[in-house]
Amino acid sequence: MSSYEVAVRAEATLGEGPTWDPATGRLLWIDILGARIHTYDPSSGRRTVRTTDQHIGAVKPRSGGGLVLNLRDGVALLDPDGSFRWLHREPVPGRRANDAAVAPDGSLWAGTMRYDEAAGGGTLSRVTGDGTVEPVLDDVAVSNGTGFSPDGRLMYYIDSPTRRIDVFDHADGRITNRRTLARIEDGAGFPDGLTVDADGCVWVALWDGGAVRRYTPAGDLDRVLTLPTPRVTACAFGGPDLTDLYVTTARVGLTAPHPVAGSLLVVPGAGKGLEQPAFAG
Image (tube, rainbow, N blue to C red):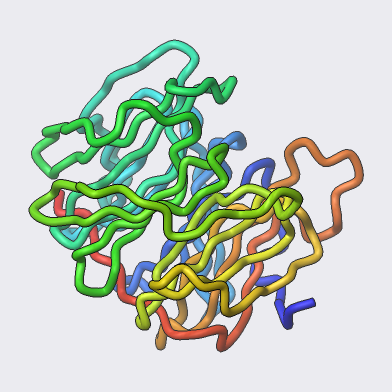
């Protein structure tokens, strides 16, 4: 078992999307099905919780302050004063938002999926600060982990049921040349959220795998962090030096959940993360 700590003891139904906000020194994370945005300040221990009106797939900092939200019915902005407004609203019956990432150019790459996880029912779209939406992938089931290499020339992506971590060439907001970086073997769970570290290695949370794995840019597995609860959903580096790996977990579907299921966990000194860009909007 890895030397994890419980950063925030919680009972999130579907904890997800940890994101370090360097401007505020806080870790943002969400409960998708609980429709909640959580913040955690590791220096003071202070926590906040805000409820959203619908299921939320991701939350990221904005360059001018406030947050961008990937919500069931589209992408919205939360201003520093707490006011809410839609940036792009596109409700689709039976579909909800899922994971998202901010690209080096400040655009939001926002994923969706159907509640029934039907193949081809999900999408990945690039959303800019003026509300322009460009479809990137339109034939996915569960759009999940998305991240960029340190030089921005590669994009990593997970459509969970495929059991693959894929990699694309990335330039000027476009992706090409899709190929497989690594495949999760049967019985080891499904790849979920991911983060890329300063060495260009990819850390992947394993749903029903009770672990986070680190893969090199060549696709070699070189580290496994085992955790006590099976539904590990996503990971991100945080803390003032970006050396602590924060990991979200879920309770949904577990008949006898471990006491830490649904909590925000942290593995101190796990590696060295990359500072993530804020959404330019």
